[in-house]
Length: 264
Length: 269
Image 1 (cartoon, rainbow over the protein chains, first blue to last red):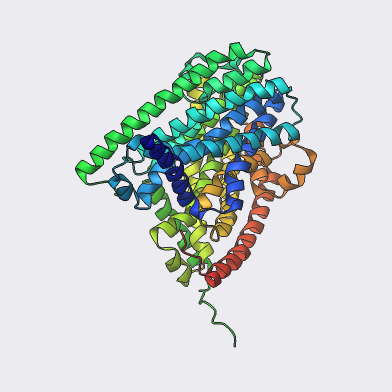
Image 2: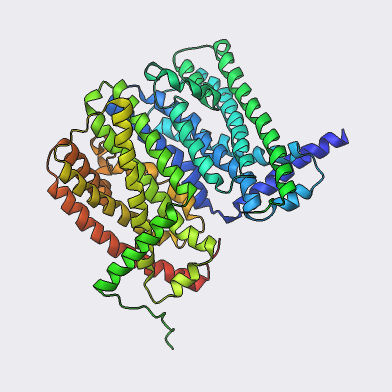
């Protein structure tokens, strides 16, 4: 029991401290600009593009881009959570710790999950008001687990990208490419009827199944029909979490062996 | 007692051109060796173009694919300018050269301008990549109304994008993580400039904001040069507004630089 409490403390307190340290540079204005305004403005762009082309209603773009808003936090946050330890020279001190790596790194991802919940809620709330999108209480309730599954899955994806930061120098290249792929392949902005077959590769990415679930909700699907989407989304997340753990372990071992842990 | 003023060299036309030529060459070479810049230049336009092509087709506007291609190319260029402008200041801080550049007799604006123009030049690759992507994979016919005018309009548009980047870079001197904020400006400016989304579908109150953006006139010049229509007026407007933005950048930079020196926050990372 003591060990469990200790691990939980490491995840929560360690994660929060790392988050605070990472965001020591930021100001409330920067937080609002990068994490709250940016997803909302991208959503607006696609809503207006959708209106101009007449391919789907506002609900499609609002819900799809609300799910995608989590990628702003999880992809870049997860990347910075690991890569910035290296940039600021604190990685060596962290890896000197005898604590389990799983709890150590999962703690780093936890604040981004909370952050993403805030961002997604804000994006949905404001966009529903601005674009006058109607959502029934039942639909809103059904959206909650869909958003949560997407966020958890995307946080695991972000941690995988962060793990690459233990090896790659220009880790933001990976993050930018990943964010672009999520924009293109999750189906948040292209209706299913217009999606070409090759975009099915997006099913291996986080958020894709959550985006599909939001569309199912607007088409009137019940809770039971949403379960497969949620299951797939969480399975994708679990896959990335496993991959992140393996990569972190492998790159840590490789960096120690070559003495390149803090090389930037 | 008056405060000592930093020495700022007067720059004549010859020296200006020399600074620009050397600065642009240096930064284009620097960016061409940055995996981040290159990766973004390769991936972003392809993503924008693919999205645009499928969306336009889904909307039954297959005859507008050239316009979609040009709009997506401009978005890729703008994205490159923005990340370059944010990085223009941030990189100098990380490299520890910010104070030296500010202390140098050459006005800081002439150090920043070649950086943002370089990002626009590197970003112009986006346009080429997008057009090629459209031709090869989506069969978009390159039937420009006037190819020569299109090239001229594109150059004017690149300068317009560069000066907006300069104005942003000038204000970014004061921000510690300018590159993070720069990323969030991609969509609003693209939207207000009419890249992919015509400004006519935006709310009426946004129209005056679009009119004062050189990027809107530059975009208008490029898209009309591709599809046919009045090109000269948008080009002139882009050039005039671009000149105004350079003056605004000078004023902003003087103010922001002075504040950063007083508060001793110039090199905070």
